[in-house]
Image 1: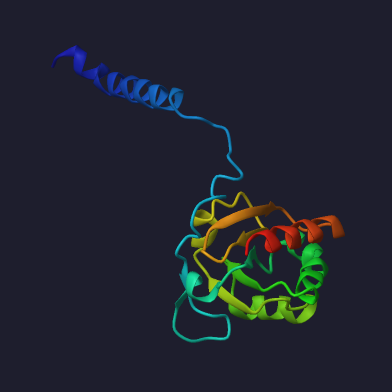
Image 2: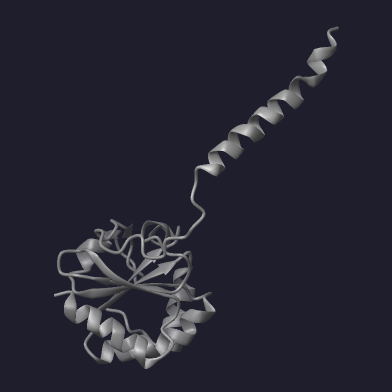
Length: 174
């Protein structure tokens, strides 16, 4: 038997490493947290939390409005709950999209921490997180009357200044 056949797997491995290395050199590792700002809101389809047929997010978000990505298992989402209530009290329309969650747990979360949402969609696969370009939960997006994302708040709302900034962005989004 030919001895060079013994080295064939090693040659393939080295070739694969070289190809992946060259591919990685051409890729940017920089995260673009506002990559979707200025772009149309993604077409996310999910059923409402209370049940029923799936609906598109764009059919439910008639801007200006806020879209908040959250989950019952998300500790920072608990922290931001009172600030979402403040936004609702000030007239903001907020549509929630529950990410990778179970409906019963989402309902319990909203019952315990408050429900500021005009509607909650149940996105069990977490497609909205990817489509909106979210880097984590929670994230809040300002949608204008044309369905364009005009602003984004990454992370939990932590103070009244965050509330005021989102209200100002909503006002401009008309």
